[in-house]
Image 1 (cartoon, protein in one colour):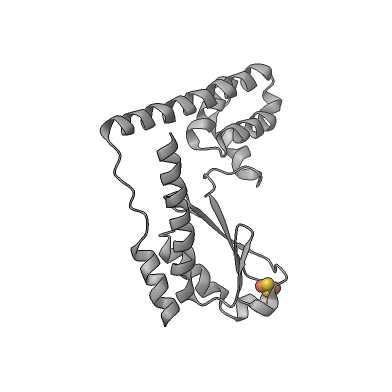
Image 2 (cartoon, rainbow, N blue to C red):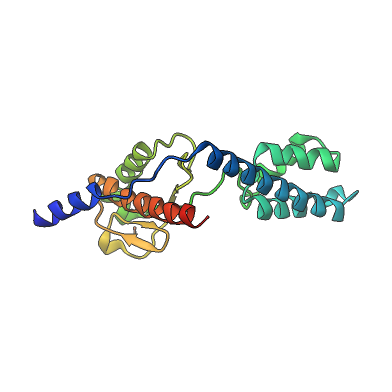
Length: 201
Ligand code: FES
């Protein structure tokens, strides 16, 4: 009970992030655009290296994914245009190979074990609750870019079923009601890091 009061107090004292001024917003927008342009310049160098080699599409896409982190439609269309091939061909390759991803990965990887022991102990309810909490529909990554939720095979912690990992951390004997608090811990941690980063920059 005393522990719960301490936790409530902690949550009440969470860091308040001041809203950004108009100048800060403009600066942020400009730097995002610059980063994006910089990535396209990198991609142009790759495309130049493979100019006229349509058979090297997989290598080009691999490099593009390294540069952008994933392959959104606009990058696929850009590659198709520059390599003079149909977008459908690029899209066909991207969807065929599992190494290519079309969605950005969240900062934290949440993997819910769907092995037998975890499944029997209610892993599906854990996934459902995560989807509800993070408002995930068909997509795996939350709109704030913080979490990517996936299911995984047995991770060897069956005695703690049902189990999920968040990055390297293992959370066991889970109950759907625990998830709000677990996610909140990472959300607050991230808000704190963001605040410190914004103060320095
Ligand atoms: S079945 Fe989930 S950890 Fe083994």
